[in-house]
Image 1 (cartoon, rainbow, N blue to C red):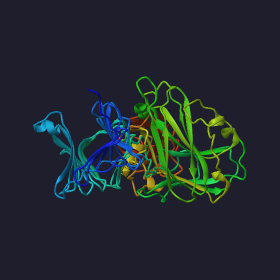
Image 2: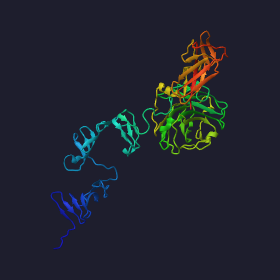
Image 3: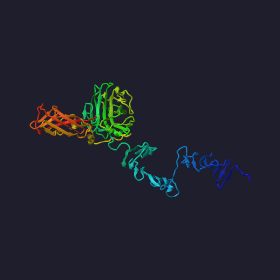
Image 4: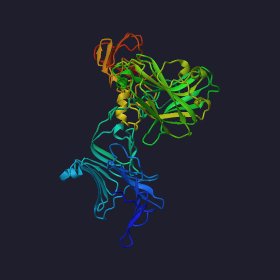
Length: 569
């Protein structure tokens, strides 16, 4: 029997119908040209719309559904592919008190029907995420996030959690914003403007307390004086001013009541007479020296260095580019420098300088020697700036010591340089300045400098005598014949056996004597023996009668002294 062929056919019931044209296209409810099944051969069923029918969707030979495209999606997610040339999406519309669900099932009954899920609860306006058929994360109508039952991230930036840990690999597409107050970036950094609470915080680099290696970085302690016109260590403990070859300069180094928020003191270099011209060999800078053993955590066991950050607050009259450097003089000598810009005069600004760990060193010694010499340049002639800036760890020479520095703080009597909040810490990101109490900083400073007289008396180190006693004196313990013996310990064990200076109650003598039938006398420092250590001192004065104050016998006289003990690096 031969085939019966038609160019087209129509079956209609009422006003509708099914129409097939000679190309095999089937129109539904109309003639072919709109709303049709498009014949694409035996391997796919396609659907089209429009006057000139265009394919809108298909079911291919593998049963995969494609809408708006003829190309399947990823091999592991190609059962349904939706594509357009613009924004694309799927809407799940539910009742106002019902739920919209997307379920991930691995079975046909029980929990296997929704082993994983995304659910929107319209009655509470909450978005839920589940795994293993249980809720794991919930975002409520206010934007607060609950992770299980142990952690909450609130839209105001607050966090309540157990142990909080994060790494960059956990956040591949960041940043992740919670409201406007919290951001978690893909590099692992998190910023919150609210309050963060947790059962425990566990840093992977550095430590929570005592992270600042700098002693007296807030400039609270000034045992020697609050103002001086001399160089080196004269006012604020652990910080000194150095100048070389200047011929006109006059200045004062001071502890000053100028400071950014959260501080109470700063260290200032105040120019009182300008240096008329900056010669090639002239130089001025602020210095801080770090004890070597305090830097041991900055180095690995193989001697290579770890990343760390130097930060500080600075205020100066002159804008421009300043330089700061770190000279490692212990074990392997190394040097690195950085510049920073002061854009606004007479304004406190924080400077943060990250330093990459040194891979070309052999570590640092665990001893009481000098580790880092940190210097902030104020002015430098070409002898110190002609070299190429050493912005990665390298070798030292005079020509690179101030390379990159482009400001002369010495050129006007109105100029000044102020610094506070100095912090040196492990890690690649600067943290807020670690404030310590005055008492804590004072004890740390006494490892390097002590005086028996009160610091409020400035450069007057002599005994303050009202009668036979002195509140700031060391009194001899033994009088034996012509001997006066002193034995006492330092207030704090010092870095090393210090340089020791004696003071009496006037410039006429070094030791104050109180003796029966003689009264108060001053005698010169002569014919004595002295032994010093980092823990204390023992010394003996032997009377020889040369000053007319000889007192014989035992126990009828005693000596008093004031002192300075210096063990700076």
